[in-house]
Length: 138
Image (cartoon, rainbow, N blue to C red; front, side, top):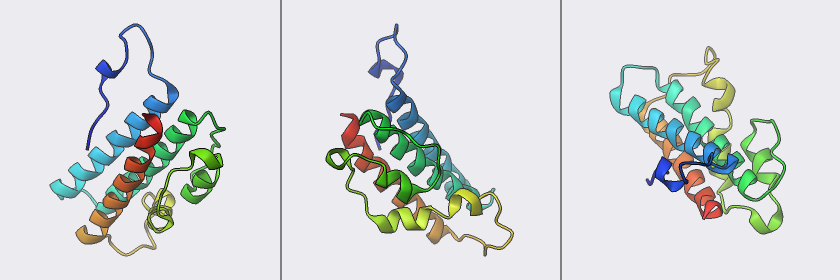
């Protein structure tokens, strides 16, 4: 996983909205990995962060494509917002397993506990979304 760093931008300029959102996506995924590895916090938080990473990456891609960025959380809806020529090649199964965690990760009273294997699958799905959006930022 390659992180963007401040040296990617000239010191006298602010990063573009696309780059700022993409950096936030990568940071959320890193935090989710730390939680998964550490094991001291509920893994549902890692699920929430994985969903957030994918959401922020999709929004970064929309900024990069000069498209409108809707203020929504639904990953499939965000993916459908891309102009046809700039749509990242993302597996809808990845979006489907991540989508519920925007709410369920925060309000998990009705959810079973998330196990390490399931959490790892969510993180892998978020990584695939990030990897596909990364192509739009180059």
